[in-house]
Image 1 (cartoon, rainbow, N blue to C red):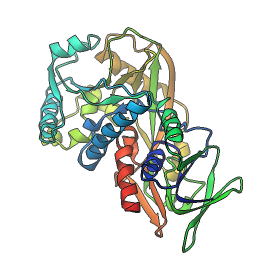
Image 2: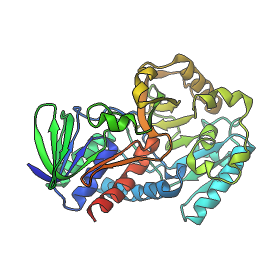
Image 3: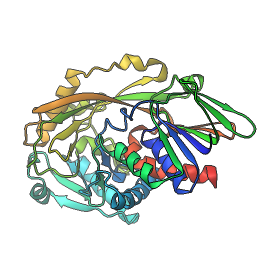
Image 4: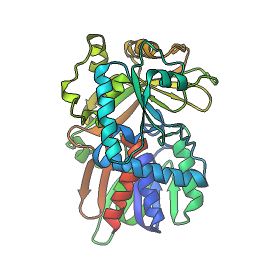
Length: 382
């Protein structure tokens, strides 16, 4: 069987490359090695927050909001437009809030400053002792990470007769010739395509291992937790706090960022890349996290698949400083892994004119991959 495009990897990055190619009417095959995606695409908060990004990734995220809204009108992807709020806990964080608001105002990207009183009216479980001021972005979205990608696949399967999705198919070979690329699976299946896009996430050994070994990609390990169901908890939307303000890209571009200092009690949290986010799920449970540990492609095993109790404790202590509900009423904890590049915001590597590796976009997948993939497909196919 011959296709215009074969996409290797059914996570959110690969899926949106397949989506945009299918929208253009191309004949597309999407291959996923597992029965369903179960790595970074589902092990996240489900927060779609262009406000955390700057430059082209803000533009990708903003475009993604448009496309998500269009699809949600046709098919329930689990999206909810409850907005995002960043809560400042001290004067430095307030300064960054005002500076980032000014920049987004210049981009005509709506936001609203909230006094502590107005914040507590909207989110009464935030502690008054923590909240100084907040910035609210009403247009931003929340998704259910354990549902979103599966529903997107269902939508695409029904929407595009020119698209084939095939799971449980591990690709181990992409062999280019003058006219096409032959793709091979572990089961001995073969397909041909004019172009192949590889979006394998954290899988670096099955396909082009030598390329990835010298790519400069690193893997980030995150720890996250989920509370028991708290259905009446007034905490809708994406809740981002002071440590997030000190970490996210949009704030690091602010004029005052280089002058802010980390308070001594937060030094250990900063060393572990901890910033506290809350995201209430539709069942009433609340996802809390996260932390960041790093390893190179060759040393991923050193991160382990366990969760570090000390890191969870650090996060829970800080979370309890922010909210009044019982953050220790946990139903589960887990670790997630995503690739990112040490020097670039995404890893782009072409093998000839027909094989294109596009991966390692870091923690920007839910927000940025839709808009990014649209641009990649437009560039490759004109």
